[in-house]
Image (cartoon, rainbow, N blue to C red; front, side, top):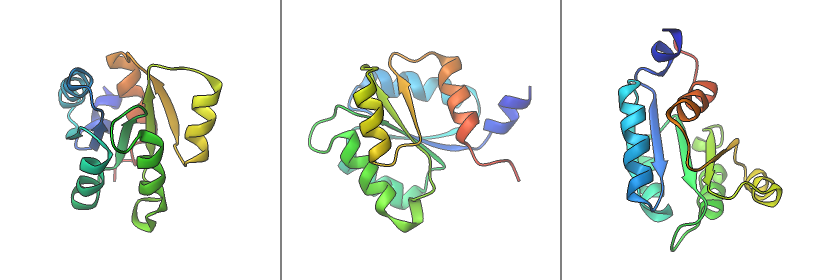
Length: 131
C-alpha cells in the first residue's frame, strides 16, 4: 500500500489535553508506521517541537494555559518551523473557527472525533515527500 509506505517514519506530533484523543491518534499513527510525539498542552508542545522537530503537527484548539490558536501562532512565528504543517483539531466545525485557524497560520482543520482514515489521509496529504 503506497499510503502506508509514505507514512512510515513520518514524525507526527499530537497536542491535545484529552488523554483519549492523544491515545487514539497515537494508536492509529503507530499502526501506520509513524513516529509519534505527544503533548498535553501548548507549553509542553513548544519545548518538544524545538527538541524533536516533527514533520506534521496536530493541535487541539481548546486547551488550558495556551490554546491551540496561540500555540499554532508561536510555532509558525519561528523561522525553523514556519513551513511545518499545523492541523487544527476541534469538535467545533464552524466557519469562524476555521477562519481563525487560517489567520494564525494553520494549514488544515480536522474535526473531532476523527476516524483512523481521516487522520492518516491528513498526515499523508501534509507529510514531506519520501526521499
